[in-house]
Image (cartoon, rainbow, N blue to C red; front, top):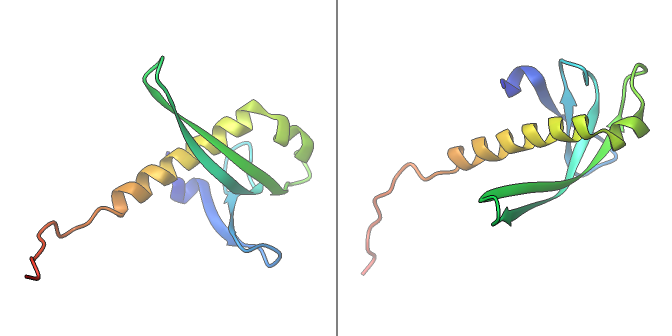
Length: 104
């Protein structure tokens, strides 16, 4: 999934956080924000589960905000994007210089 073609970040004057705007696909022009994000270990299945809150800010006329809020497909779509954002951020935040100097 190429996030650069799929989403962009937009600033909303009424909010402190950046929102995500979908650029292509079935949710084109939907704007939403992520809320609290939690990771839970599912020990029985040896998986890490991602849970998050979200707020749908704007929808185009061809979509319904209430339906999106209830849609499992839309939640999975947002979860896939969030997972990729977290993975890319984790990769990009790795230190490039692993050598440290002792100050003593």
